[in-house]
Amino acid sequence: MLDRRDALSLGRECATQTNAHSCITVGRIDLADFHESFDNGVGKLNHAWGNIDTSVDGQVTLRGYTGIMERPYGAAAGHGYGTYEITAALKGNEAGSAALLWPGNDQWPGQELDFVEIRNGKPYGAAHHEKSNGGDGYRIVNYNIDESDVHTYKIEWEPGKITYSVDGRKYAEFNKNVTPDHANGGVDLVFGALNNNPDTSITVYDVKYTDDVWG
Image (cartoon, rainbow, N blue to C red):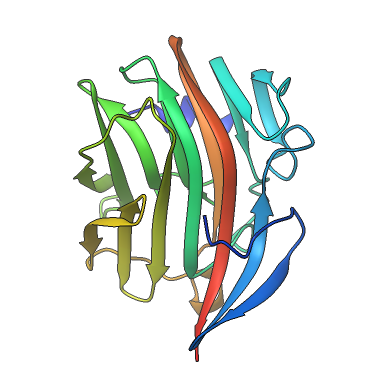
């Protein structure tokens, strides 16, 4: 696991531009409430530090001790229940880089949801929560992929359930220790990516949040 306190205290097809918009599909309304494609630097993930490479339009690469995220200004920062997606590639095949959702109030332990990071040379996701004693509890999902390739990681957060998928394949569903979003008395989540190792890097191509309304 990465040391969050040190590191962080310092696609749906209708989304084609960086501003919020909506599209309608059969039986479902997809509200693309947030989309960043990194055509103009770090864009909306502008709470940033370290060596950020924005030299290529449509991607950002983090090397060394680096991070980008939406600004975690309070419990309502970021987004609530819905579908979160991030398209990324991790290089180095060792612990150091991660794509994640961070508590909007910037308090940890809390509900931190990791799209992907590396442990013992293997990619995995994790769902963190604060235990009754104030410590960090978590559950892990292992992925059968090559994380150095470009993949789209998805987390679906709804009342009492968190689902993890990669490239449309479901890997895990968690039904315990799922905290509510801000609208229901809890804390919302912000997108983030970081690198915490000089021998690794992460390139992020796209992030998207959709507030799902079933019709």
